[in-house]
Image 1: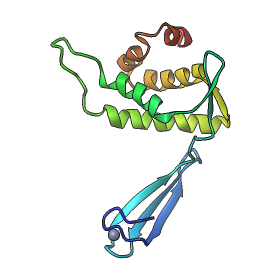
Image 2: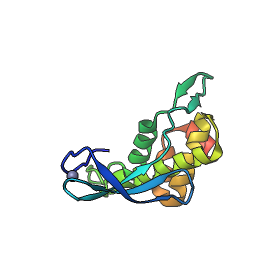
Image 3: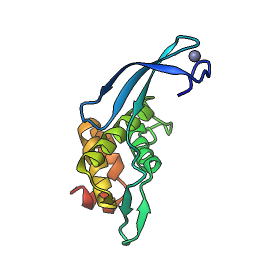
Length: 150
Ligand SMILES: [Zn+2]
């Protein structure tokens, strides 16, 4: 892997460990040229995952769509003064929750999930992390409300 600082082609692994869930590997690398240290996080891609939609059709799992719903829910809607109320951490929170959701899918060893499964997974993470975001997520979708038992 190329060094992100100087672009040198050779880096060496100084340390590595498997994450708690056992599905990812973290590596501490150092550049052989500029000596700077960085880490990589290797996690299986879910590009094998098929999502069964409500209309019965199958589609490829699209992590950016899950990220977008998490981000929208966490970033909050318009405040009373009409301005956005993004607390600034929505992107980081959405990324963290997306990783947790993908870990759960990997741990389940499924290769097909339904739209409802994804809604439940997103709902579970939001409910335990940010309750207002959980309600915003379901706010304008009767289908999500029904799936989440609201
Ligand atoms: Zn370097």
